[in-house]
Length: 263
Picture 1 (tube, rainbow, N blue to C red):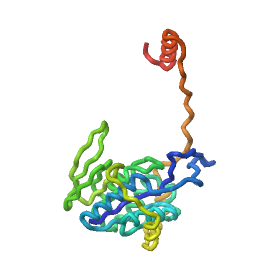
Picture 2: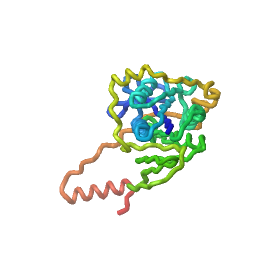
Picture 3: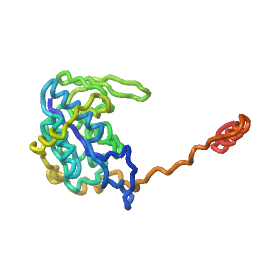
Picture 4: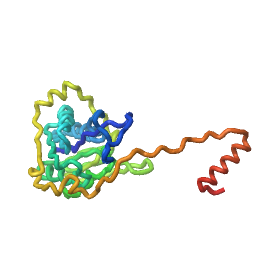
């Protein structure tokens, strides 16, 4: 079983005060901590578990700047056998389509039975790369996957639906699955393990190696163009209504009328 996992290095923004760059095209990342995208971490863990259960290889692939090598070394420390980085500066600024195109060119000549990605990336939340990549490769795909059971050339998967529902599907391999959080418990990766992984080769691919031109990737090749990044406006503070029941009732009626409610 040859598995390819697409991963991404993203900033941790959950508990920090964000600032916007002067050009309003991105957040200030200078002092932020970066790590593997949460959903991709689950995908990598699932790939390694499948390899441990039935044998095979795991290849980690990322599109990013040179610092993304640290993310790949983490994947190698988790149990990946090989790693590839698409680090050409011309690829920076790619939207989901241009990213999927570059990944497609890198993956199409590789051996694979299964491709795993995270459901989405925490920095943009587009949740589009996996589906677009599968369509470009001409293979079936399943999103929001919470369970994978490989049986020969067939995969039985469970996926989330809206309203707390789930469904089970049988998919012929090769296929692509986007992995949801909670499918497993990613293993702890020690600093020593990551340092040991530094000895493993990370294959670097440039735009010319992907048989693409600079006009097909990056901002030029993107179909979505970012106009502006901004922090959500601060909403009006909550109003605490005081007084006796009749006064509170009157004020509530006034608020409902002001907001266009029906009395």
